Amino acid sequence: MARRYAITQQALIEQLVVREDERILAGIEPDSAQWRAYFSNPSLRSNDGDRYMKNSPTTITKEQRQP
Image 1 (cartoon, rainbow, N blue to C red):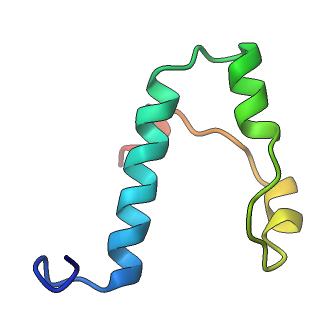
Image 2 (image 1 turned 135 degrees about the vertical axis):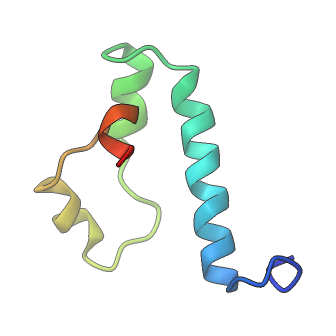
């Protein structure tokens, strides 16, 4: 599939993850129990990413994502 779109496998996977995350978040009310549960789960895989993420904001609004 990555070859078909002329991108790396990593880029393809990253795009799929971001789209799925946005789909999930679109169905969750901010500051709800589901929202808190979604963001309180530890990462499934970590290369010190958990330590980095603790010092970073956990949510970004659509307005903040747009240039």
